[in-house]
Image 1: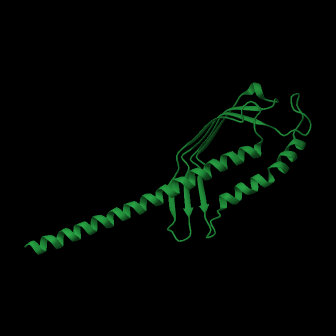
Image 2: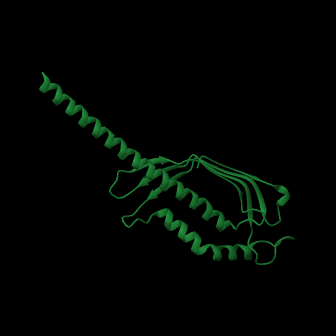
Image 3: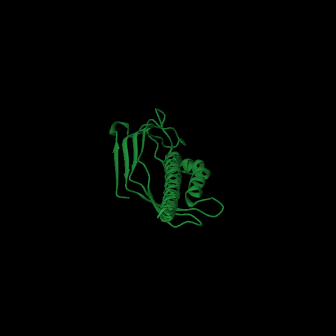
Length: 171
């Protein structure tokens, strides 16, 4: 990652939820490996986060020092006023295709977690889920664009060839 900027509302320290005014993740590089069955390393990561989130939240709640606002056994909750993931570069390896590099559009979310907040594992699911969605969209758009360019080039080449043949028969 090129940069991570975190701005916390210090007035929310020790309270539920902790308020993050801004989390800005800039220039991360993601390695996407898609298998022949359609699964990918990022889908597996997201599934693992979702499967283990309850356990991770419970363990974090047990280890977390109790403050005036949090109850024993309650996981920490975080509310993000602004969450930005910008300049994500994806190195995609897809079976049957040449490796490709795609830059996905910036992801900007506001009021993530709302007034009650989300647990840290939910934050991971949100971030990874948004990145996965943008990756597949951008990769598909790039592949479709390349196919259309190749089809258009082939069509243009056919037109030139036919034009040459017509021109030769007219002479």
